[in-house]
Length: 127
Image (tube, rainbow, N blue to C red; front, top):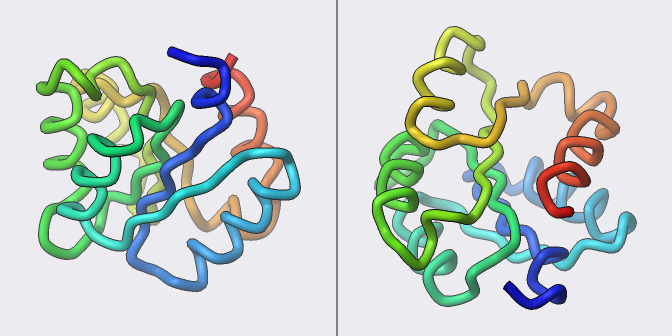
């Protein structure tokens, strides 16, 4: 993968507030951010842009995050893109999501207060 793509992050979330706040944080840290607001758009954008990392909410319209994750990991073009799941749901889903191919799991509520754990996780996954 060309080095320029590793700094491109696809942010998938149906909350405009969360997308905007997170996009600003990532842009300030030097990342190029593309966004999607539902599961079907996320798959289309991931296939077209092949980002270096995908930040994926679980509760999405049209196709939920778990479905998006399964489809991304089933397609050769997108299977190797790391997916960091961001959710308001409890971490009881973490083990299942990691088995399905998620590179990690962060709770959104904590990220609004302090984006540092997100930036650290992205830094590890985009090296």
